[in-house]
Amino acid sequence: MNINGRRVSRETQERLEHFVALFQKWSKSINLTAPSTMEDAWRRHIADSAQIFQLQSHPGNWIDLGSGGGFPGIVTAIFLSELGDGWVHLIESNHKKAAFLRGALRETGARGSVHAVRIEEAATIVPLGDFVSARALTDLSKLLEYIEPWSRTNANVRSYLHKGRDYRAEIEKANGGWNFDLLEHKSAVERDSVVLEVFNLRRSA
Image 1 (tube, one colour):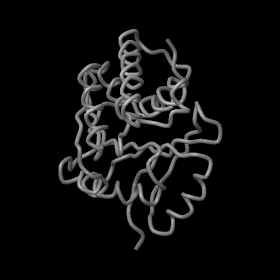
Image 2: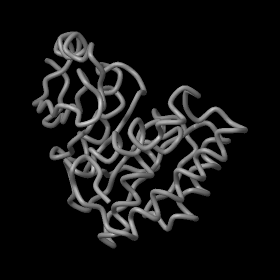
Image 3: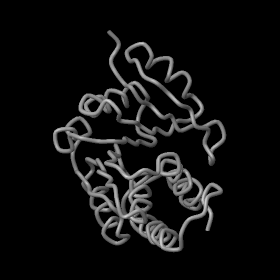
């Protein structure tokens, strides 16, 4: 099986398939994502989320903000299972969604744990991170505010943030309060979308 033109092992494929089945089952009772995206879950969610691991495949300590339906956090955790190393801390304050995420980790054997706390509290529970991810959460300025605690404890932390067609306006706005280095990775799934790789984050003087 290929995802975004890259081969995926049979074991990882089976884990992803099981996760999609769980996602679709739970979506009938709790709102994990927009109903209009359900039929195209592989492209809209799995392939889109897989880009994160495909950009950064080194095992490490991941912080996934606002994990919701598990994208990209559970997908990253499934890929890490194949490596047998690394860990994803999924931050999700909604207790129903957190219960879904815990079940998904357990049933897929993915490498991660769930913290049912607000993002602003997460750094006190998980103080160290190598990588941060977020998808469909909030604008870039707010994301950088969320990420800052981990950049203070690890100057080398890198963040991978899915953004849509208005991302340039978000970057311009964020430049008013923050200094950071940035790589723009064109989405392999959605036209006009990107994954922003942010590093060397610090507040403007």
